[in-house]
Length: 229
Length: 229
DNA sequence: CGCAAGGTTGAACCGCGTCAAGAAGTGTGG
DNA sequence: CCACACTTCTTGACGCGGTTCAACCTTGCG
Image (tube, rainbow over all chains, first blue to last red; front, side, top):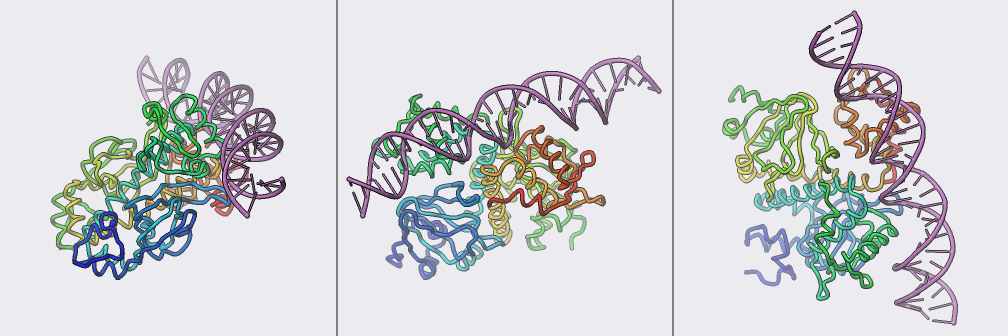
């Protein structure tokens, strides 16, 4: 058994986790652990693809720009998530950006090596393919929501999915502190509108707000706002 | 060389095309050619997954419902496209519906057999994975467009992508006759609004309309409407 | 203490979805 | 071949949801 793994936490690494033990030593030769501070950019839309990242700890937002001052947050990547996997395929250019929203530790794997791993390790490839299928499913649901769901529903949906992904802290608040700007970008709306919606939800006792923390009181009612599907 | 292939057009079949020749006979045992008339449903959102479809000829829309009277068309599947591949993954339920918009001939492959093929044929699996990566890229771009692009831009985008996918007929019109309702659902808007936008574009000499046919005159100006990215 | 950055609120504007109603096609049966 | 019903097209008016702008009010920080 090869020891330190350069700090790699096997359970959280899609690559390590889906390959035979004999490969791990080789993998470690091609891995690189990286840290990012809050706000730091991991990679940017339009950049040539260099590799793929596995999140060990912290959180990153995956986002896409519109013009100079608008963005849409596609998803958040936390423990165990993969970043930059859309760099596969033909174009070899990142289609999205990734930025740390909480201090982030990732494992970087060179794209060439990752591609080679996929081609030789069919189980890894299959798992990744299934992951893609699931992400596509989510993505298409979101498209429909964006097209037809009013803002209040989108905010509700955003809060629910954040709680589902990050759980709650000891106070019952969603265990991710997000700037209101990010929340707006995630709900595909504007700062002011999201502010007003959250205020509404507070008055209706559906959510509780303390500073930047948001907690969900009435999941039932929140979910009702997302109906129509 | 095994002959008829039950009518399978190898060049257009992702499965046949990405597997070794020795497999083809086996594949043919698990294949089934099916025809659908315009308007017929291939599969529906929420149905359990039975298999995967390869389009030989004709066109289908892939769409998702919102409430009872609204839908969003995610994409169109034509020659060589795959339908129902999102049925992979864990849920085993179609997340979208597929409906023929032009008389359709498809090849149906049982999901169990397809999964087995993917697991034994790593090249096939890799190709599908790359296909997913590309679809995800498109899907995420569309999400951003839905969030930030005004209707006129989305119609422009819709027309450009339709022309790119289907080419033009002898008269220079987009080689797919689409009901205005479908066009609206594709541009994620309403019948009336799309009507007005198309009228605008006609007045500006950017597009030409004859009956249901739509032709693009000025790709430059259309593309300009989609800018902001 | 003062300035900057973000939070809070009001008001105006406007894109576009909705409704309604008439015109123009399309089909069907007598 | 016409009468009738029915769908699709076309256009106008209206109003709501949500973005935008701008002002004022906090809070943190050097």
